[in-house]
Image (cartoon, rainbow, N blue to C red; front, top):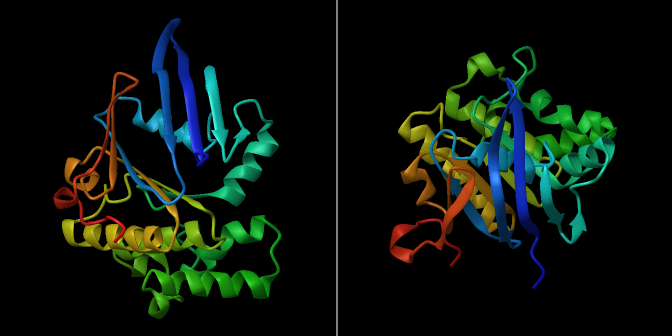
Length: 237
C-alpha cells in the first residue's frame, strides 16, 4: 500500500542572528490513510516544525515530502495553498475563531474563500457542527461558548470541506481535562469515519490515546511505536 504521507530525509535549517538552527535533522517517516498518529515531544524537539511541513505551511531545506504520491516540497505557494484548502483540515490550540461571527459563520469562512455557493457552504457548516455535537449552538458567538465548545467549532471548521487529513496542533492545550476528553472523543469519531488524524502534543497522556506514537527529540524521530491495545482507547475495532 502506498503511504498517504511520506517524508524522506527532511531537514529544516533556520538562520537566527547569524547562527543556523537545525529544527529538523533528516526526518523520515510514513503515515498511511486511516491512521491515528500522535507526534509528541518537549518544546524545541522539532514537533511544531514537523507539523508545519506536514501541513504544507513551510517547505524543507532538504529532503522529499510526498503527499498521496505527489512530491510537494518544490511546489509554488499557490499550489501549496490549494493542498491546504483541499486536503488538510487544521485544528489549532488557540481556536482562531472570529469573535464577531457566530459558530456557523466561523465554520463557513474557509468555504467562502473556496468560492463555494452560499447554500452549499451553509449546509456543510451545519452538518459539521452537528457532527461535533453543536447543532444547538450554531448562532452562538465564541464569547458565548466554553473553551471546549469553541474547540469543537474549530474542528467543525476543519472538517466542513471533508478533507482526508486532520492535523491537530495541541488541540487540548488550552482546555480543562473534561473538555479535553470531549475534544479527543470528537477526533476519535472522525478517525472512526475514515479520516487520517495526526495529533501534535507535548502531553504524554494525550499521546497515549492515539494508535501510534512518534516521539521527537532534537529535530529527530527517536521512537515510532504502535500503541499496545491496553494503552490506547482510540484504536479501530
